[in-house]
Image 1 (spheres, helix red, strand yellow):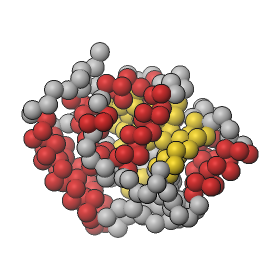
Image 2: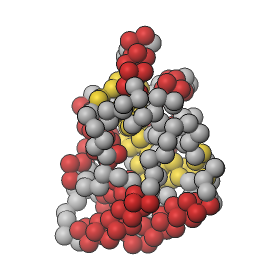
Image 3: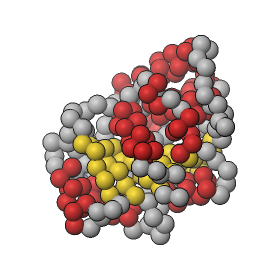
Image 4: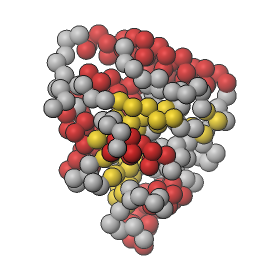
Length: 245
């Protein structure tokens, strides 16, 4: 029952060693796969040094040339995890906005509580966001409400990027048909899993805005998500989804 955490990176030298050590120090074992999009700040070099000196059998890196998008990074990581036989595969940010300790809660939602997809949710029990400007909190919260309404999926935090999947989910979803590359990717993955008949469980977490490094979030990312939802709903009427076995 191997567990893999995928961490996409672009210029995360301030955070990457600390987040890797935090995951490696958990009481249950999680391996880490870093997908680095050609970070010019040396993020990949830090990861490779840790592989050589301490974590040779638990830490891995895929280096890509240029910024190819969050969605394609995770798709690459999902394929890698499936090929290497992992049973549970998780998405997590490098900047400590997601608490590594919560990986254990997501894992137990999958392994013990019957979930196929476990979401680290900011909004399932109120609004649990720290250090975000109020405007951004409201934009994110109401964007998730909008997505939930349009797509008809029982998920409060539809744009969440802290997610765990059973292997079977990623094998059933046609990953190469996932079209969105930005944060709308997170919406599309949840919607597709739901359309395939998988059980989704939200696990309450507290999301803390990054302290070190630069945020990759922008207004354009939310625009992509809002417009993309309409296209996603429209295309779902004409698409046949694989079903959970």
